[in-house]
Image (cartoon, rainbow, N blue to C red; front, side, top):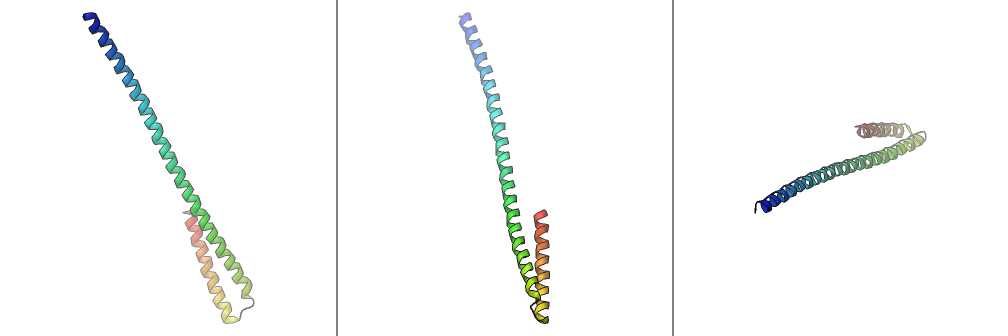
Length: 105
């Protein structure tokens, strides 16, 4: 009887040790999973930032094109038209400056 009790006690200790090892393995997997989730979240944020940069660059290019076209046509305009064109150019350049600041920020 005492011999069986000893065997059972040994089996319980072995099972408890195995359970502890499995808990450590599971904990390791949970940590890896958390790190993977954080990495994925970081990658998603990076992707969104690049998308924002691309969109701002696109808008800046459109405004630069408009500014260039406005300057080209300015020579053909009368004095009043010329003043309005320069005002629009200043507005576009100011908008470009703000876009660049947004892109940097």
